[in-house]
Length: 120
Image (tube, rainbow, N blue to C red; front, top):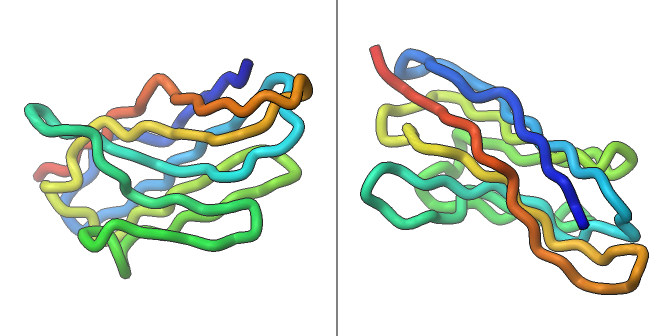
């Protein structure tokens, strides 16, 4: 089983920046994809950005040019640098991993979520 611990959320003014982190632990053989999703009140959860073990990145159109996803494979950690934040970025941000455990089983896991609020 994979445990994901997120950090870095908070309240920021429009135009500001935040950096989210998500550290994975457990009986992990490898993590294929790490990513961030978000869910605003009354809306469905949506993809923000994902990154493969080889470094291939995919972003939602709404965050391209403002957010940057990165990962440290040695630390099983994924980051989301968020710049030029807008009020519409306000949401709970969730970390997700797709991994293979030491038991050779595939697993998709979610963090507990971290609140990001963009407001003046």
